[in-house]
Image 1: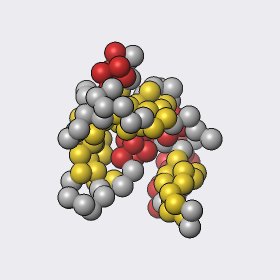
Image 2 (image 1 turned 135 degrees about the vertical axis):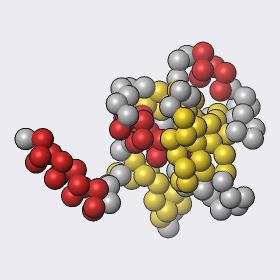
Image 3 (image 1 turned 30 degrees about the vertical axis):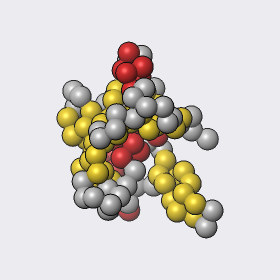
Image 4 (image 1 turned 180 degrees about the vertical axis):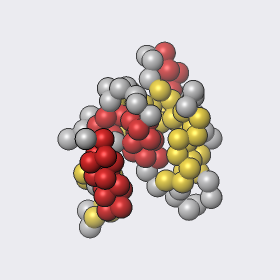
Length: 126
């Protein structure tokens, strides 16, 4: 399973920044709706509305050509608390699914139209 580490120490994002991680700052876009937007300097807003902004941001950053080993740290904008940290290559492969036993990380699968579009692009590149 992926090496994604939740942390709950207050304001410990400074340590992540000093270690060279990318910092994803998230804020809830509609109060109590569970959707978050996220901003990563110097890439700007990489997540516009997501229930799992860390995983969504990882996919967006990989599409921009970042190294899969790049560490991404999520920081809550309102509290400054570091929430989650891990390599974008591993995070991009995951999605959160609700199960009878609570939320679980499972393998990410692109929507059918994205897979078809990627297959067409691969054929054109050949």
